[in-house]
Image: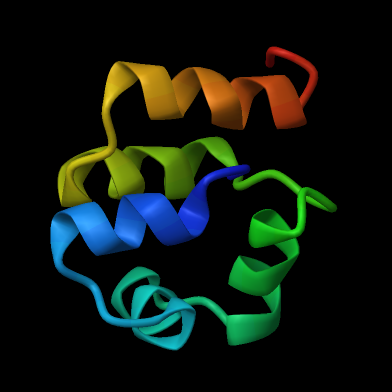
Length: 68
């Protein structure tokens, strides 16, 4: 996710580590999204939507994964 820090601030999560904990992932995975190196899987995108990800933010995620 290109705008991870903006997303977590908007939904009240204090850090990337806290986001990783909520998603039951390693912090390294979440950090790789924030740097644009990787994209979350479909299952993780569903969890992110439940946390409050908007359609606009979801499009950013899809652009990282090649639109899949």
